Amino acid sequence: IDKDTSGLLVVAKDDATHIGLSQQMAVHSVERAYNTIVYGGFAQDEGFVETNLGRSKTDRKKMAVYPASEPHTKYAYTGWQVLERCGNFTYIACKLKTGRTHQIRVHMASTGHPLAGDAVYGPKNCIKSLNGQCLHAKELGFVHPRTGEWMQFDSPLPPYFTEFLTRLRKEHRA
Image (cartoon, rainbow, N blue to C red; front, side, top):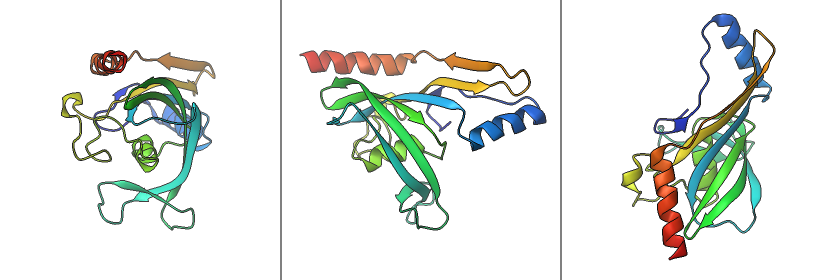
């Protein structure tokens, strides 16, 4: 999970559990959903971004979108669905098939919809009051490596996120 991203994460307490979780991640069977607020509006209610990601050639701290033929990149898929339109911003849910570094942030920025509060991939006049990107790991589901039981978790949005969303709703209705 990226710095300044809130929400769920999974931690393995032993090697066997780590191996079991890693195998699920490798075959993309772990279900992950993130909620975020992005700049701009979408013409469609849902869609996806499917690209290869790799280190930026101009800034090693950043990731970038590349064609599949580019060496040293990895396939990444982010599905998205509009939850609410709020004027100049859109509240969306993102579902990941892959889990690459900064994946949602890079994918949304590549479509012209950077995350609110993202000083790295967003506009220069970033919303500083959010103290980072408005991105929350909301849902997490996986098969428990030891018991075989399906585990599903949901995390409520943190106060900074709900307060910003409430403010956007008020401004949009005004």
